[in-house]
Length: 623
Image (cartoon, rainbow, N blue to C red; front, top):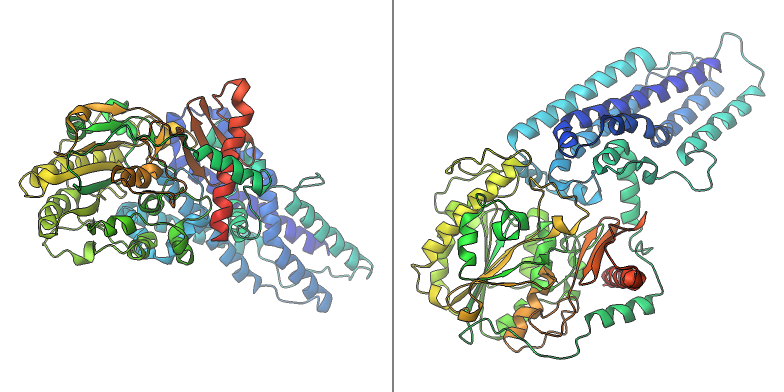
């Protein structure tokens, strides 16, 4: 029995060393981020201590099956061979290291730990590979293989149970039930996190004011399991339930209430202009000089501002491209824990901007240089019934393709010529892609070498800006140009050299520019400064045509002088909310944070945001 207990202790130590070693690898990989975010060394070192309770919980879950199996074995036959157990541990080691390498791979792009939403992309592994650079893919796969082999070897040499776990002299029988009760009891306490009234959770690893320190601390396997469990329960229990449903509905309706119907801007000189949406992949507001960016990054966009209407206070409600499609064409806010494209059974419940546009006689089309199967976007677009959808496989122009698709400098001018064959008026969207990882765009411009953080992304945006110039130059030579309103808008934001945290409105701010020959002269070179969202595009666009838009319940006509300015973004376990009075970010774990609201309105506006989030989530679950 003594050897049995010693073996389990060795297994526990083995897992703790494995967890700490992989934590060290993650910290080493993102050491530049630690320096940029100025995380003190003491906070980094604390990660390797504060993590121990949740590491023990993770190890305890992993040890339950082998503990029971070995105990039964020695009870039945004290000469039982336990070498077969190595395969269980080999699989556990391989899976755990794979989780860590997956987290290393996505953190630089998503700024989050590996979660259920990320795993959904594994349904299409070829898409995952295309969005990562070849060097990164090779590096992560090689690291996975090397560390898996290393720890499997160590387990074999130091931990693997011998053929005989019982002692030479059999102990009294009473020791067997006492031993198993003791072992299982200790494992249960380990899984639970001790005798505390509240069981352990990932919040146990959130000890620091520095986000990256918390990311390093929390065990990735435990985090992933907890996240997957929460998602599984999403339709059974509303994780965003803050008040009675009736009250949430009432407050949300009041938030959207408009006391008058007076549109202050009519942007077009002509009745039915062509509409060209240029959806900018991962463009943050601070890429743009007028929105706080460096002048050298997007000079061509800045030049277009002189003839357009620039929105200076607009935010994306989510952080993925597939969610942006539903924002723009359905006015649907981002959904925590999942995305609309992963729920085709719910498409029917989301209104489509294409329906009224089509009824007005518009020809509708969508162009993308990559593959729209990514994240199931194609199914959503097809449900919206575009007259024409073109992606990578439909383009036969002899272009050189990167890992993600055709480069913007090839694709955008090509689209400008293809649109000429469309009947007018048309409603066309072209989605750029070169400012998405792996950033393998052609190096046709001089590199911006002053960047300390996100240089690949920032230079890709610089390249995409150059592609916009080529696009507009090509469009000006086409007959449809004179009758076309252009809407340049980002699908979502991205980390820049400013290093804004994901849970901030600075991070989620995006550019939106309306320009084109039909634009009213009085609006050229002006700005729209009220708080708004990419969700507001459907209602605002339909109002311009005098079309009712009540079905777009989450979308506002921002040109109506009586609309109530606010913006929302979702986080996996919370949301952000901004009004004229101030803003806050709400965490289901910690409550309101980053609050800039006056004390006298704080509670009512926090309740307003809670009601919005709850109502949105409840409706989505019930679709």
